[in-house]
Length: 395
Image (cartoon, rainbow, N blue to C red; front, side, top):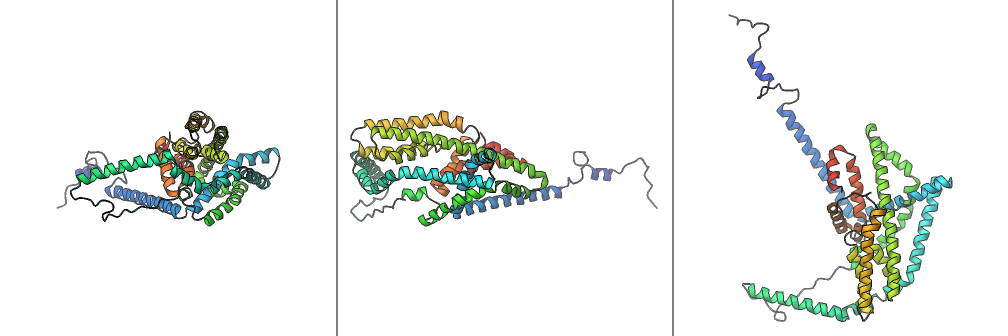
């Protein structure tokens, strides 16, 4: 016998259950468990590839540090000189290539003039450096501090021996004291640039890279835009120009602030009779622009030279107060007005960027850390999936 046919208006309960979910709502097409699993798996694979790509890029930056430092410095210099090239192109009606040659030549002439002015004092400083180191070691204040540190260290060691379960051998009775050789300051400053030959080799490329970046700017932007799909090309161009304006404001403002600080500190050092006042003034004024660490690093060179030069504490106090006052004035007045809020990084992001790139590239990383992270933040802001990361980095 055949089962009775269902009426036309009736529905099959089993089919209804299959077409509805557990809550009674109909299942949409594609909302099956396999689709969810596949989509989550694709996201996990994509996230893993992104993490591996970032780690690979950081590894490449570490081992090819001299190449990346040279390229990034050339890009920063080119962005700083770009307004001068535009002025020559617009007002003098010169071609971009010829304007780039003129601007790069003028920049090299100005740099040569600054180095020539400071050469005599710098040469005398480096020739007297071994004598200065001996004088620092034999200075009464340094010896007093060294003896006090030694006394505190001996007290801590004696306390440790009494707490320890087994008696520790005393010096001179079989104990061996191992002293590690300290890392020279030049190695920390130029870490990542390799030997002196590699440094000079990298510096020789910077003028040519700066010229090519200035002369071929429009073509480079156009070819970079063509690397992306057509619907994203406008976003790419706006991102590039946004990074350019931000970096230009950052570099120009810091150059002006560093120039003001160099002139002011050099004048104070000259007035108090500090030796090598030109070199120490330029060094202290330039270092003072480094965020967070600038005050401490800017105080060290003049104060150390002052300790072995002056027999009274008056000039040293004047030097310390002047450098501190100039740094506070620059941090609270000059930098906010000249640099502004172009970078827009929060203090945590700025500090971590300085720490990380300082560890990876030494002194060069202290200069490049904030521009790199600020440029990365500008890129992340223009992509929807990473916009929240940019907001976290922002101020």
